[in-house]
Length: 135
Ligand SMILES: CC(C)(COP(=O)(O)OP(=O)(O)OC[C@H]1O[C@@H](n2cnc3c(N)ncnc32)[C@H](O)[C@@H]1OP(=O)(O)O)[C@@H](O)C(=O)NCCC(=O)NCCS
Image 1 (cartoon, rainbow, N blue to C red):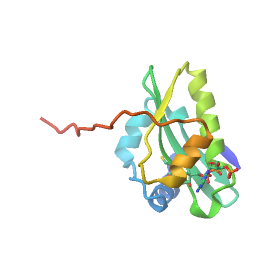
Image 2 (cartoon, protein in one colour; image 1 turned 60 degrees about the horizontal axis):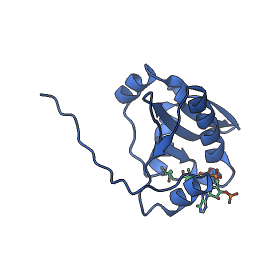
Image 3 (cartoon, helix red, strand yellow; image 1 turned 90 degrees about the horizontal axis):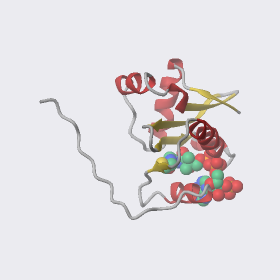
Image 4 (tube, protein in one colour; image 1 turned 135 degrees about the vertical axis):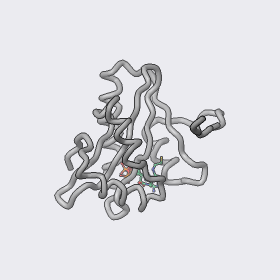
C-alpha cells in the first residue's frame, strides 16, 4: 500500500470511494481551490488494484481538519485508514499544527470506533454551518 498525494486522474476513483462510504462528493471546482492552498494534505492510499482509500486534510494556520476519510468497503480493517491518518498527522505536525479537529455523525458507529482507536475524543461542541450565498 502506497500513500501519496492526490492527482487529478484519481478523481473518479475517489468519487467512487466517497459514494460507497455515503459521504458527500467534493466537486471538482472546490478541489481546485483547495489544491491551491495545501495540496500536500489531500492523500490517497494506492494498492496494486488502484485507489483504496482517501483523506482530505486542511490547515488554516491554527487548526488542522480531517475530512472525507473513506476506504474501499472490500479493503477495510487492513490498516488503510490508520495509515492515511498517520501520514496526514505527520504532515500537519511538520506544518506546526497543534490540534486536529474532525466531524463524525453520531450514528456512524464504525467511524466513532475508528477515531477513538486513534485517540480522537468527542467534544461537546455543536456543529453550526451557513452556506455563503452570492450577494
Ligand atoms: C471508518 C473507516 C475509514 C475505517 O477504515 P479502515 O481502513 O477499515 O480502518 P483501519 O483498518 O485502519 O482500522 C483501525 C482501527 O479502527 C477501529 N475500527 C475500524 N473500523 C471499525 C469497525 N467497523 N468497528 C469497530 N472498530 C473499527 C479498530 O480498532 C481498527 O483496528 P483493528 O482492525 O486492529 O481492530 C472505514 O470503515 C470507512 O471508510 N467508513 C465509511 C466512511 C467513514 O465512516 N469515515 C470516517 C468518518 S468521518
